[in-house]
Image 1 (cartoon, one colour):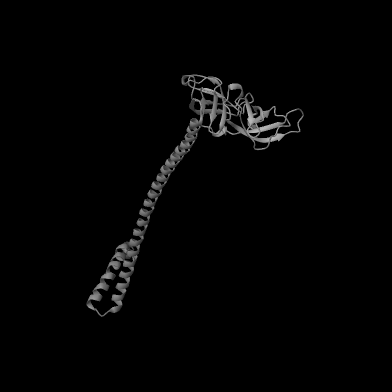
Image 2 (cartoon, one colour; image 1 turned 120 degrees about the horizontal axis):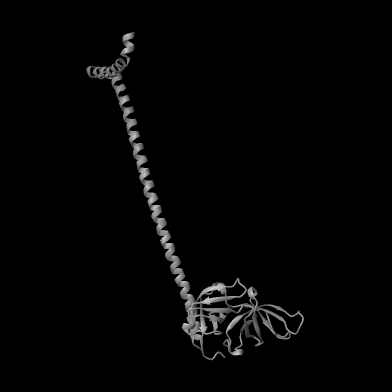
Length: 272
C-alpha cells in the first residue's frame, strides 16, 4: 500500500498510456473486432469534430473582427467625406446667395441715374438707442456726410459720421431720421420719422387724406437729400381717432436691416 501511494502518479500515467496501446494491438490482431474499431472511430470522430468546431469558431470570430474593423474604417471615411461635401455645399450655397444679392445691387446700380459706390455692411447697431450701421467705405473713397445710402429694396439711411475707410449710416428707423415722403397711390405728402422697432410714422398727414393699409410710401425728393421715388415702406397701421388735425400712419420699412449685407452710396448727381 505504501508502494502504491508513493508511485501513484507514475502508475496512473502508465495505465492511461497502456490502455490505448492494448486497444490498438487488439484491433490489429483481431480485425473483426468491430466493437473496438467503432469505439476508436467514435473517439477519434468526436475529437475531430471538436477540433473542427474550435477551428471554425476561431475563424468566424476572426472574420467578424476583420469585418467590423473594415466597417468602422468605412464609416469613418464616409463621415469625413460627408463633412467635406457638406462644407462644399455650404460654400457653394453662400456663393450662390451672394451672387443673387450682388445681381440685385448691380441691377439697382444700372437703374440709378447718378454715380454710386458699393459698400459692405460690417456692423449693425439696432439694439442701442441709435439705429445705425457701419460700412467699409469712407473719405478715401469719396464719401461725405449726409450722402444717402440705398439697397435693392429701398432707402437705408444717410451717412452721419465718416472716417478714411469707414462710415456710420443713420437708419430710416432711427428717431432722428426724417425723410420727405409721399404715398404713391394718392401722392399725399408727409414726413417719415423713424420710430425704432416699430419702423416709422408718416407725420403731418391730414385726417381727410386718403390713406389705406398696404399703401406704398416713397421718397418725395423734397429737401434735396434723398432722390425722388425710392421705396421707403408700406402702411401697416392707421388711426384717425386721435386728437388733432393729423391721422396716425405707421409705416413698415421695405428694407430688412437684419439681413442687409451690401449697400450703395449715392455720391453725386441730381437727386431730384
